[in-house]
Length: 265
Image (cartoon, rainbow, N blue to C red; front, top):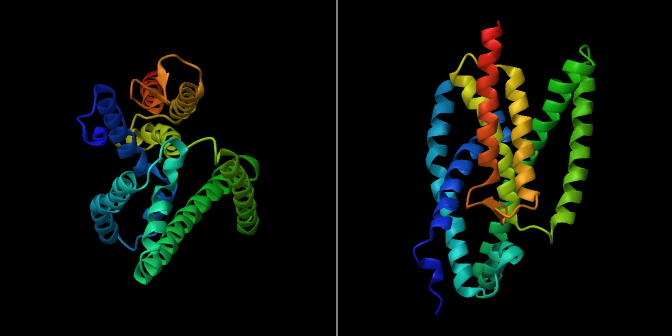
């Protein structure tokens, strides 16, 4: 029997888990759709209650995914590489074949998954279309644009984004696993840490170096992830995500650039 999955992890695997703790811990707090929902709270009290609940909710939701993964390793052979994305569907297929209860449970689970995906996608599309129409178009191209025009542009931006994302989903379906896509997502998300967290706690933070830091951080993260380097293995550098390297440079540009601008003033 193969007990490698429960062995003590080696040094590289430990570094990889530390990297996931940092990059997911910071990156997951900066989802545009999550930040958007902050403004929907009725009061500060309701917001605090919601945040307190969300601090513990991922422990239970993530636990379900872990349990499914463990069962898939035990009952479904050959789940390696891109095929590991089939773990949930393969387990549900086994469950629904055993009883009528399992059949209806699978239907409910699929409906819940689709509802969660639609909710997240809807919030993300609204956030991105609002940023493109109000923060970019309205500010830099047409200051006097009416709300009706901005709303129409927001819908057009959403449809264009949907078309691009559908094409990417089809193109990447057999080229990257879900885990690799999640790695790249958090590599990009964590570049927003200086813009949000540093700006909240440091009044001296300046917009220009923060923007330059984000651009440089994103470029370095993608360059390291997709470039041909001997020190990069499976998209990671000695177990650490490229996004962390980009974040360090991003942070240095933001801090020292802000200090320089403040001294020049």
